[in-house]
Image: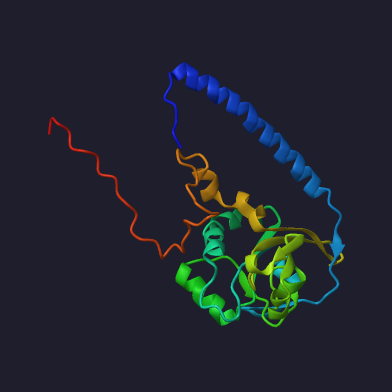
Length: 245
């Protein structure tokens, strides 16, 4: 993309015009957030069980004494050797948020269908600390629309992100987040789920890249992302030698 090079005054006028559009986006986001909080809830009656480093735990146990729970549906199938690179990119942003979330009455847990031993090994490899449990043998991932059977995929389409998605654009595992509330009676309610690109605002790296001169500089969504231990060495800028040296 070619860019015009203009005077500071011309740039300032263009920047002020863009600022008006940015403020529109901020106000729209605030309005959408209010609508999200106003959504009706669905009571959870199913007894979901998860394998954790402390043994089998219920969905209620995952709240860890808090009233709010956010589950990140991490793409890591039972027969996979490693977690999804895109989900790993998200996970790189999580550990630093935990102290803030926990002190705001929110617990964040990742859930995958991979067996716990695989999850623990990959977690050690990546150096993460956040809670991550296995739903292997449970209907949890299927019920929340992020895991699909071979038969579902063979049918030609699956329901993902609240709409029919062709099988060739789906996988046996897909990402998302789901939010839950637990009241004083111990009742649990599903309040919200988001899929596909719905979780981008949780990816701080993308938000920073959006302000870089070349933006995300991608040919398809997040095609530049690798697991953090699989990148080639980052290029180092060496300024040209000064004529006075």
